[in-house]
Image 1 (cartoon, rainbow, N blue to C red):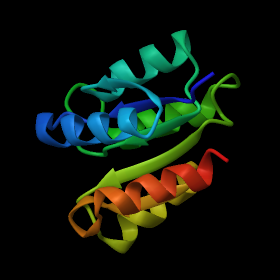
Image 2 (image 1 turned 120 degrees about the vertical axis):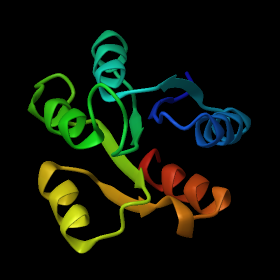
Image 3 (image 1 turned 90 degrees about the vertical axis):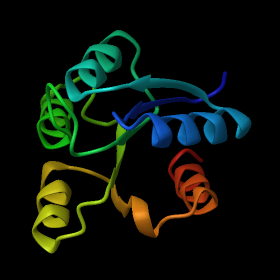
Image 4 (image 1 turned 30 degrees about the vertical axis):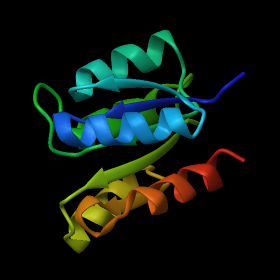
Length: 122
């Protein structure tokens, strides 16, 4: 069975790029346009990995990450935060909340993202 990746991303451009690349890499992919939707989908269908933006409408990625890690059925899901917030305090907060990885979108190629995801889903 193919691994399931849930992408929390409100930017249509990024969401489309990630989805196309991940599907071509052989993953099942679903896009959630806000943190509340990420939680809703994750609870229905536990993902193998979540790619999570921080700045989203309805519920931001910080709150979604906190909720995911507080949920006993989801706490072991790998979470890679993808954001353009590159401040040390943001990175520290996300790591403290339980994210496995923090990647700055603007510094990242799609192939680097693909390799990072593959390393978590071995």
